[in-house]
Image (cartoon, rainbow, N blue to C red):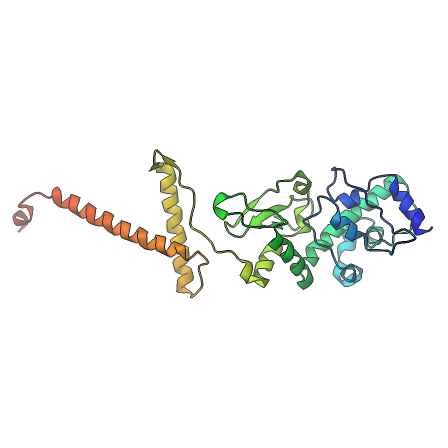
Length: 291
């Protein structure tokens, strides 16, 4: 069967392989090259399709190295057909049901390989560029000041949870805004990728901040929230003391040191004021009576 014939087999139906979004519709991209165009890895077109912005393109030599695919043949149905489809060498005419199963397997296989690739030197470099460009979005927390996000998974096992976005400034995770990204399997990024990236590129780690929203009513702090914030601040100070004792940087912004000094001065003023109040209520001659 010629490559042109192979392309016509897939042309009459939108391929869910290029969507990698399950039920969402996808813009169809021809799977095979024409007679006048050179053959390319199918993953190139897949990455450029709408909704797949979170993925980086896997190098062809990485895909064709069987060592990098160790163990995946037991996790993916129709493994060889799926690999051929990804590398654009699939040369077999099949019915619609079989084709759909192979495309689903190709989607799963590419995601599992992607989770391995993005923790390599080349993969980290590609994802770092996407991170700098803000491809993954910005933190919705106002105090984080539009800090760029990174995709991550809460589990390494497929079909456990969808992808989340990690903010390195507030160290919290969020759901993607777009429904196209909300249905991506979190295992296709893994639980370690975002931490490895900041270990390899420590200059990208943003400074932590102690600033936070304080609920107030007519300018006065809400008592329950204020008590909780004091408790959290105490725990944070204990953590920072432990880090300093071990000679490690706390990672908090320098401006917080000024806030701490102001806070200590305020506490000293409150203690002096409390001492003055105690003196007012001291009974005259009590000390002499005791003697």
